[in-house]
Amino acid sequence: MLDRAVGLLRQLGEAGAGGQQLSRLADALGLSASTTHRLLAALEHHGWVERVDGGKRHRLGAALVALAGQAADGTGLRRICRPALARLSGESGETTFLIVRSGLNAVVVDRQEGDYVIESLTQGVGGLMPLGIGAGSVAILAGQPLAEIEAVLSANAGRYAQFGSSLEQVRHRLARVQADGALMLDDSLIAGLAAISLPIRPPGHAVTAAIAVNFIASRLDAEARQALLERMRREVAAVEASLAVPATLSRPPRGGEG
Image (cartoon, rainbow, N blue to C red; front, side, top):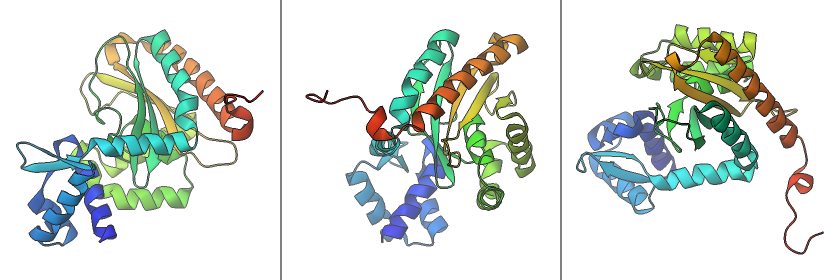
């Protein structure tokens, strides 16, 4: 039963903010409509699933956002990265994101707004995208061992078309990150937007997260983009240095501790 519930959550994650119909979920998982309905009702009871489109569709619920945040906080990552996101947004006026890996997906666990409102594929904190879609997601996938990259690409290849991308395009973006250590993406899936992303690689570990900045492409020329990239590099280097410090040394003292 647990495997079926997890399968439902994954299907809903792939469906995005628009959600998915019960019948399509049942077909995708090879379940009966009644079994799918019972599972969705149980997940909805816990806030992990919610109904949209007048109850005709289901999508991931707000409770999963809290879980994603708790997972990031468990490693100290969100706490460490939040000042960096705030500085980048404050200095550039653009919107910044902290994105982490979750299986075959990437999930936004923090977002700092810029001086203006922009659209994003993830629809804010808690949003899921397949690894390989979106600048931050590409930066994370590019930092994995080659065998892991190929396994993810094989598993996600059928999902890329719904985001207007092909496997070849994803491979090209991965190669750019591997060559340059960062990704400047102008061929955004949302017209008029561009993005810059950098992977976060804790010392001695594989990449599990990335910082990304999304902006209206016409706002920043090549020189301004390069300056923003250099600021991002400094912030990511500081984050990686903080992650290298043992938690018992880096945490602030509690009341009564000297």
